[in-house]
Length: 243
Image (cartoon, rainbow, N blue to C red; front, side, top):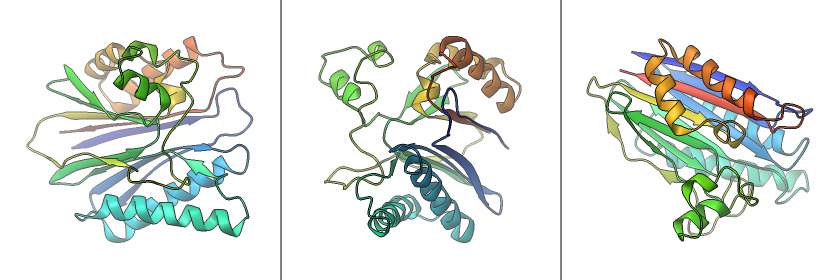
């Protein structure tokens, strides 16, 4: 069984550069979250274009072993071509998180500082994707602690995204998680959401919530309480529970 809930909000901004959606192929599902960069008519176009590209691929072909590679590489080329057409090279960029849930397995991939949290072991433990950001690099080097990411002055400096030329490193993929009847929960979040929800709160609310909708709404309360809603960034999240 799979339960899910999706949220996006412009926050304190006039336009929403986040884009979240799901796509289906029979009973299999693909969840997609993007956070556009580049300002009005740049970030919005990048995030919506990339998300729609991945969704169309999944709805037409479903999952297969190379799906995540084809989705990320294809969407990247599409976005680079669009930049050339509009004479906006390097101006339209977006993060991308993709979660695939089939009857047999679960897998995911990401690029940028939008996150996927995987909660397991009866809701007691979690793992998260590694941010492709300056502050994550500082954590890896031991110069700051994990808890400092949310408040560091360089927290918005992203090192890898869709729409920028890739070097040898681009997106990161998970392994394939075989479904065995265990309960797994997932939260896909843009930085405007995860900056205001701490991991211990995420775990507690996930265990207490009867549905993903309830889990997501209770986490959003922390965002609205802690962020300055007159100027805060767009915020978006997708919650999925699989058993």
